[in-house]
Length: 169
Ligand SMILES: Cc1cc2nc3c(=O)[nH]c(=O)nc-3n(C[C@H](O)[C@H](O)[C@H](O)COP(=O)(O)O)c2cc1C
Figure: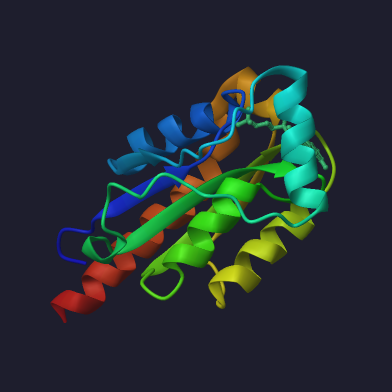
């Protein structure tokens, strides 16, 4: 990783995961990409549709990714927790890209329950361990996103620096 290229990818229904993703991209000097799908997820109807997508394990169609993951050394992927699961659009993104993903790191935003299971699902979908993971409650994210992500960003920066050193040897 002489010039480590990092991409932060996220889905956000109501802005919390976006807040974290934007902060992460700044801290890591990374590119940023939002995952979008074709469902209307606004309001109560959107909430219920999102819940149903998870409970019924419905595959959702996402807008084709603009960024080519193979051009990056590390992809940092963020999701909100939905019913103790990774959100449906991020699930689709992981399924579509898992064969091509380089090293990955995961983060999620959540109300207070189910983040461990969502992180485990992300690992299982990608089929490997993440470099690092971070779980941030919506309250922590809105209080101070940078503080909530500080340790995660530190670990990822260290990983990038170590990878760069190994490449130079
Ligand atoms: C359909 C749905 C299900 C949710 N289920 C959970 C849950 O199981 N546990 C939890 O802590 N939060 C849950 N939440 C809350 C979100 O994870 C939380 O508000 C998150 O920060 C929203 O991120 P966003 O603004 O990026 O969409 C759920 C939200 C939605 C829309």
